[in-house]
Image (cartoon, rainbow, N blue to C red; front, top):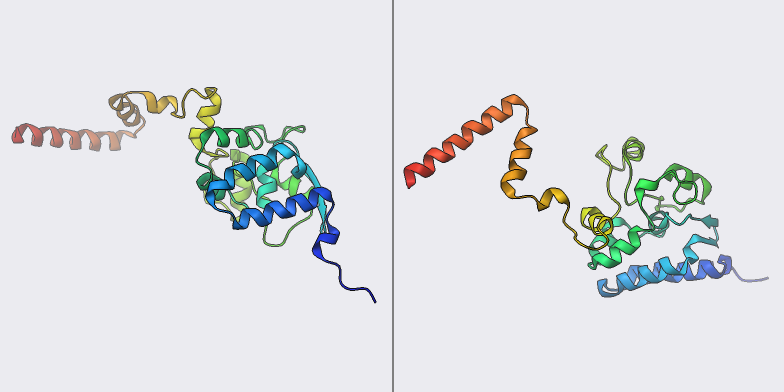
Length: 209
């Protein structure tokens, strides 16, 4: 009578690479997280592989779907990768703005339906559009109905400016101008309250002078 099959017996060649990657990511230090992520995304083995649960297929813009399916969450990448150049490279493979592009990135519900489900590791997006946020909110996995950038504003700005800056245009304006713009968006009652508070601050400074 033959012995029980080892988990590796159900893996194809790509599946074995993915399996080693997932084990490594659970045990390596932050200093090598970036290298492993870049090596994996460039290898493209994550695009199609199989294990004991079945066959997995991911489009070029679904690297975050693959990562979460392997137990690697957004915070792991955000905090484990400090180099914005590396983050920008990774974001090319998970740009939530292109969700729905049949050749780049499917909606998360479609990806879940078309891939095996791994217990305790639901496929999730790092970034999502407002429409996706609504669906995820209904699932109870996100609290906000607002969209989210895959790897944050600094990474997105770095990509948008071809590496010129990580600072968004609104933060490049003088502080006084930014405050004035914020005040202009306040409802009348709150604006009146702010004006009174500013007048009190001004009076106090003049008296102290």
